[in-house]
Image 1 (tube, rainbow, N blue to C red):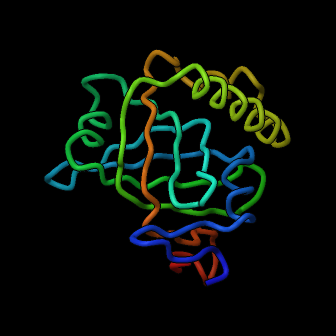
Image 2: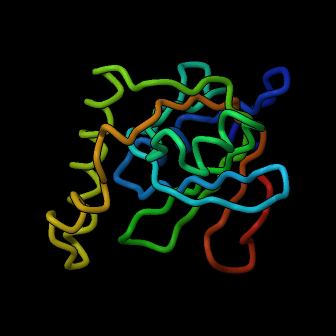
Length: 164
């Protein structure tokens, strides 16, 4: 398995994949309710654990939002990663193991990610002010950690949707 190894019920990501997730990629977060109705939001500051089996990030999920309710109810989550500059995409699916208020370190990691994302987006003509608007309001963030269970190549082309 070139992208990682099995670690109990989790899939451990390798260094190349971790570097991609930690770069200036956009992070889209999908959740669902008990009736399978989806909810979509943005994630910031992705951080893969040292052993590669969990992913932590700040998710725009204020109290009372469908995303927050879904994370707290069933925990099913999918996070898609794609840089704005190239057609490469990756999806990580898993189960939420914690949801809470972001720590100062979480918020700083989200700000670092925003800076990296802004540099990427500026390469295709998107001004930093637009990236900051996409970032949202940190008061609406939830700190989320998920156990990585499935990884998919979502890069457009013949291999799109292939489980890694």
